Image (cartoon, rainbow, N blue to C red):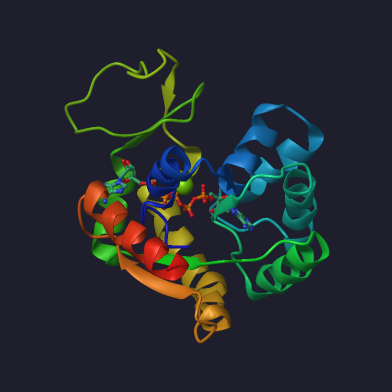
Length: 208
Ligand code: AP5
Ligand code: MG
């Protein structure tokens, strides 16, 4: 969990490399549906490009299809995002014979959010997340040579709206998990490697 730009995608990629997890980013799932050109994708684009959340039922049915077809341990990135989604996730995991082991909240001061997101580019092909300076030129992914793009919901106005939605709908999820013994907050306002080091410490502590 974490606000827009907190580093969920960046840290998920590191967790996947180290622990060989299945990464499910609900934002990426939705953007994939948009890229497919389907009717559902067109409907989704109208919602997420404005910085709003897609309806819980739509998100949950898309997610269950993916969860039920993997045996790997999973890192959810950007899900659950409402208390209703958290409740359904509990029920779904129980039904599929799985557990939620840890809930990690990456914190970031709001003053950092717009700057970080304005500097983000993502690869169309491999999904690599890059931080580029204002002087950046070219739109070629250094990892795979794919085309880099800026997300339509990454304008400063949309980011501000996404933060409002985050406060209203997603922050209450914190209370849902606080007190379960699974919840931890990690300071996201450090270098990506330092954030990852803190995350690993938490993960190792929990499995001791
Ligand atoms: P989603 O794609 O999940 O967007 P988000 O939550 O707004 O978060 P971001 O992806 O913008 O940020 P991030 O935390 O992944 O940061 P990143 O690692 O890229 O969702 C998009 C939309 O889809 C939502 O608004 C909603 O409409 C819909 N949606 C998604 N899930 C949904 C759900 N469950 N239910 C309903 N609707 C849903 O890093 C950001 C930048 O910072 C990068 O440039 C990166 O290089 C840089 N960076 C990362 N870490 C650091 C660091 N430690 N120091 C300096 N720079 C850093
Ligand atoms: Mg992300």
